Image (cartoon, rainbow, N blue to C red; front, side, top):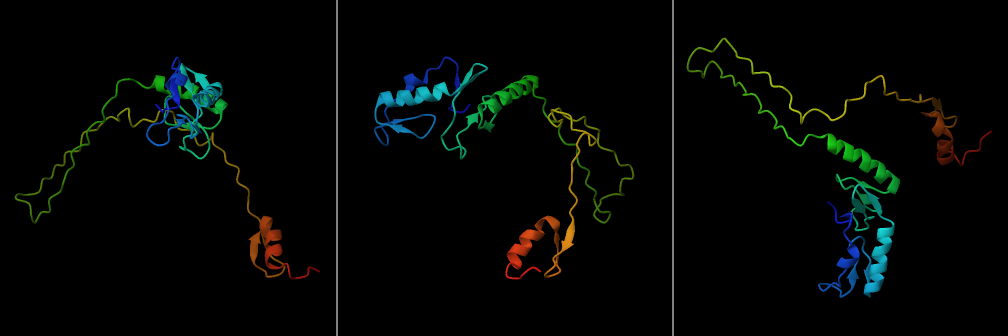
Length: 194
């Protein structure tokens, strides 16, 4: 788990200590802030705790350690990061449900079937074998099966806008209709339109 994900009941205010390696100040464990006095660091961490998400026995503090460009939350079940609290709560619910559905028994993947190598007749010791034995059929392992069924092609509909091409009245090039005005302003602004 990421350091910004705490078990409920853990008090991060008790673990604030002065840095003795680089600066003799108090480092925040959840962002890059430095404080000169202990009470300032405690107030700062208390603000982190007020804005934290308490969900499923965890306290998830917003991370400002530079994992992403913007402050974010780390999921307590997977490696996902989310920026908004409501998105995190929704993600945790689905992420926990999918982790509960996964079986604790891990079925090892079946070994690959033995490959048959044909030896050229010129190098073979004896006559070539006429009966080829097909490799045994291997049932698919559970690791290869996707956890959710794939969406049917009829359920997914994409709306594609048809491109309309027109000729520029000044230079007779073919251009998309929606780009014509921009083209005229950029290329033919010196030309007077009659």
